[in-house]
Image 1: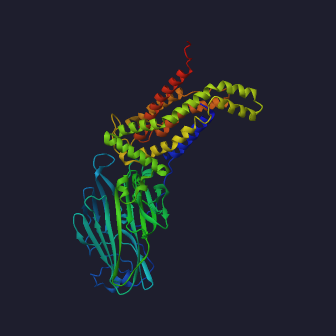
Image 2: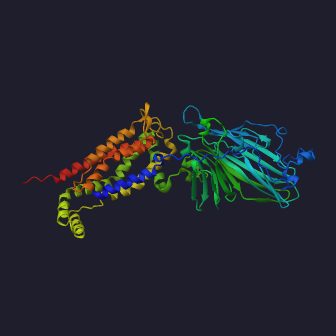
Image 3: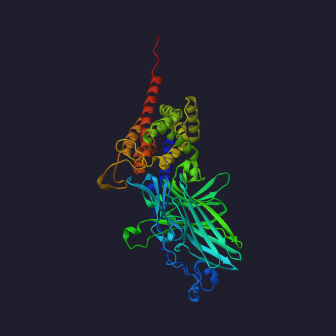
Length: 581
């Protein structure tokens, strides 16, 4: 292999090592601040009693002593707690509570959890202060005086309830009312929500609020890397900028023109709140939270909350304002996300156009043979056939360069004191014999976009989740663990994964077949020795990767070996002298 080809391979290896965050040391997330569950205290005297008193209009016989507590939450004894209101359709089972008119949990009926034993619970918030869709801060203003209160622990009245609809309502003594209408249509993968603010007084009221977009989302794999807060910025013309924040990087605040939606995701699922109108959201903040438990294991659990803050609105006397939302709760599948312009959640990156094409091809093969492992084999074969002309050109160039090495060594001796003349003579030699020094690395560079796109496709596609192949490979989204060893191997763990081992052996054999470039240069020989360790490096990189990706790499390496043997055989035929007549 020529020197530049070796350098190109080393550069590619460095890119891959940087690209895979899983091999980098994990930085422990900062200790999250424990948020108090009680309503925030405001300074006394900031607001007049009609706005600050949280008692409903239906209870007007409040004494002066009671009304003097300016941040008194509604007496929970007045409105009983209804903690298990179920709305469901063929896709979703959701459980609601009238405390904060919020969502307690969501189960996705058509998907299994990570254990494959029960239905998938997308999130389950254990802290009542952080239930999704609760209004965690409400700021009301009237006559130039304003106050901020929390409604997360306030019991709303249930004014309507059916199998797929529920309505909550709460009222204030100053004539301000809030109604939440929740609905799940039969085939939807989302919840529809209307928040109606009504002003029944004879004075204008200003209102802005903060609503919990997501909290308590489950994770698959390692929580610190799997769970992320997400924000979508509308870039116009149907394009969205996706901002993702890992839990270890929280808290995070986003304040920008064009914030379109916010929520939380794990590798394969999303819980995202999106207003119907794009001009509602003012800012988004994401904060790490914990349960406050003294249990050491509980302290290791990771959770966070994503809050959406709205722009202030003015509500004229005897009028109302309505904000409509969609709360998407489901898998990160392009078709479903596309219904709400959430495709950027797929996270395919800069090569998303190529990734989408490869995913369509993968799904096309699946329709013919309903096994995604077989689909990966067919996709690997198709990619190898597409790249075959480039690969053949690369191999031919390497063999030509190998044949010219004796002549190159002679030139190095002849012009050892004149590097400029040496370079000129070498170029003349290459040109005369139709060899290109860059022929070995250029095709490799051209293949990188396809490789990275295919990597993201196989790593992130929901289709791989819990998709079996054959034998011991029961989930293409997970490493192909055959069994667990009674001891742990440094950097690899105790799981015995077979495909990375097969890939490593095949890679060593492939390197043996590659044309060698004999050289008297000690530095070049050292580079060749370093290159011989490349298969081991890739084994470490891919050992804990999804088996779908490792399957592709292993099969691709085996195809490359066969392709290399065919090319070598054709070159040997060209070198064989023609029979004389």
